[in-house]
Length: 457
Image (cartoon, rainbow, N blue to C red; front, top):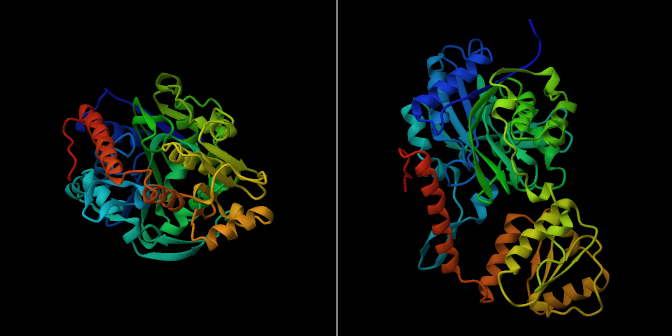
């Protein structure tokens, strides 16, 4: 008998109905050896799906895949099944709600609301389970044995105490990690601070360290609708894959899944390579047994994010005529944040200066006044010399254009957007209308794929 880890691939008719999804989920798990010995009578099973935002697939895992897993767990003898997730920090903090109040626009969605809106709460409860948002779960402080980038976190007690832990990732690309599969999916279990401050150039090792807290007993991957391009959110594009995958080795599953996405060398995915290096599983595809369909029979060449196909400077410097960017000694995370900040500044015709990095070189006199000059990131804010004098002058004048943080992530981007609104360059009502239009586009697309779905507003 082979000692190789098994990863199953099941392909079904597309688009699948509920019965077909149930069949595919059962078949994928059976091909890996089934649930016998994984779920015992009277046990507590915890399931962690990928719910990125208040949008249905491909941005979030299909609710029917989740409910199928809940039913299977109950059939296997589980007394209690809990579905837990924490949405992206952009969803939690920055996302504009498609509604306005007399006081202006609202931002942010909590995970519990996303679960209700997508119909996941109802599906899970009808299947015999319960849902909880990571923000609302009881946390305990955990020291991570063998942690390299991450050493101590606040972690949901319900996951630590579970008799069986099941990971349900989606099959998507990601601008910061190339792909987001089973290893990255566990990021949503951390508290808000842990999720927020991970988005640096050590993000991949951070993700791997999370898996050292509690390795999943089973991974069930939703590859019905994949996502390519600028994922893992609404910047990506749907790919009709029509597959469900399963395995007990999360590293092996990510390795094979990335090959199904057209990445011939799975070790190019840093989370997979680092997890194998740290002894969490098998990444070498020659040491993995694939059951069911072959990789070649389902493989599609996913378009990778531009951050993995183009030099990062081509996304940041020399692009926008109205932006002078002074960047030097900046890490890869700040280069990406600079690109995101520029995309906001480019929306208005006025000229702006953006200062980024530990030692940016600037001319004696900028082309912009202080009100149109932004400092991005802690390194830029800590720079001395002429930039220190400029920063002091801005503070004395009461001009706050300081977008701090390491990295300068969602909170800084919110501040930038709010500053442009206060300067009269952005209209909050237009942002609200755009959010509503954007949401309906995703809703309309998914309704064609699954006519039984309707958002629970």
